[in-house]
Image (spheres, rainbow, N blue to C red):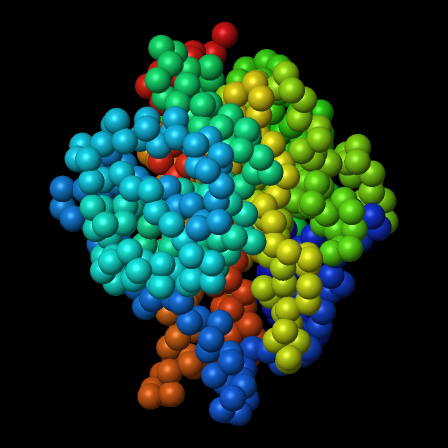
Amino acid sequence: MNVERPIASPEDPLVFNGIDGVTGQYLVPPIALPAAAEVAEPRGEAAYFEAWRKWLEFLPMRLSFGLPPDAPPEDYTKAGWGVVFPASASEELRKSLEPLIAHRRERMEEADRCHVLTYQSGETAHQFLERHGAPIGDVEPSIVPYYLLLVGGPDVIPFDVQHSLSLSYAVGRLSFDTPAEYGRYADSVVAYETGASVPNHRQVNWWGPKHPGDRSTELSADNLVAPLARGAPLDQPPQLSKTVAAKARFASREAIEDDATREWLLAALHGRDVRPAVLFTASHGVGFKANDPLQLTKQGALLSQDWAGFGAMAPAHYVAASDIQDDARIHGLVAFFFACFGMGTPANDEFPLHASRSGDALASAPFVAALPRRLLAHPNGGALAVIGHVERAWGFSIKPLQMTQTTIHPFRNTLWKIMAGMPVGHALRDFRDRFSAANNILLTHLDANTSNGKLQPRELLHRWIERNDARNYVVLGDPAVSIRHNDLQALP
């Protein structure tokens, strides 16, 4: 996770997210603003200017749900649900999700609100919707439902398609290695939604390391985790009545700064005491170079307070997929991991801060992170959904450009909606609103027909990063899942 305070001078460097899983240093060294600002302004060259604009090619000027009045977005049985298979999906894979498809179909208010759709290789989101007859800017559940579950990794259905669809639809993704894992997730969701009781307690857990001398975790612990858990920043008296947990009538347990150990998080994930319904973490994600054999299994692992600091790194410092044992009690959990690469890694850097604007290779192929995959397809009953970030996560999500106060409304609103029983795919809409707003600022700057709204290079750079950062929040799991908030167990 990268922290960006407002830059006070051109010499103040940008500090990038990501701790190298081998060296214990930042994955990308800090860069001075003048070098970074070279990418902020196209400098008037026509071809270069047009290439810069194409970074915004799939984004609308406004965000609109466009649902009919009889299809409230909070209710998937009316707004519709669909599963999207790549055309290359095997019959075995399709059959593995049939229990979930049948379960969703049975609950529909109208038969035409449940669909099995196909994605053709190479399609953009617009082409996918157009081929299925969906109207532009509107959501017609009888054609393409509001809730869409993408099946497969970003190598078969790209992250860009997921991001673009998410502007108008509630989108989730499943990406596993075997049909058996898809089947385990499907069975787990059906069991949770149809069981006589639920396994989780009415509690939310908060976990946020804070490393000395690290701007990233100083911001996230002080101004994200603490306000969410305590109702006030870390250096102020708690105001528990103002917390999202209090408003949702949830118990709350926190581990911030020195308490945010690896063992604490593993205990929460394994359900060794109380089994929380919601888990929120904010930390560095561990990263590896594209040619490192550990990248697929460890990238996006959550760096704990046990980390000894820059220059040190060991598996005992972070929580990875391999640390989740088969006897873990995860069933029914919704987790939100604020960490770089926490949900996945694109093939190329989406924040290339040099004039060529060609992103360096991050991986030989894009992939979904191993930790959320392990949680979702867990053999002892999986998590319902995991929310987080593809690529790097920036401090702009906590403290936008040149604001003196933090702005964590999207986090607070998303978590409250999840605790209130709203489907996770729709609960994430606040991040899409922020994405759309940041995008409109950039489009105004690029509009050659007006001289208003032009940005200085430094602000333009920040807005560009802010917009990409807001775009990259995703749901892994079925976007229609929701916590059975009225059935959660009381604390022992």
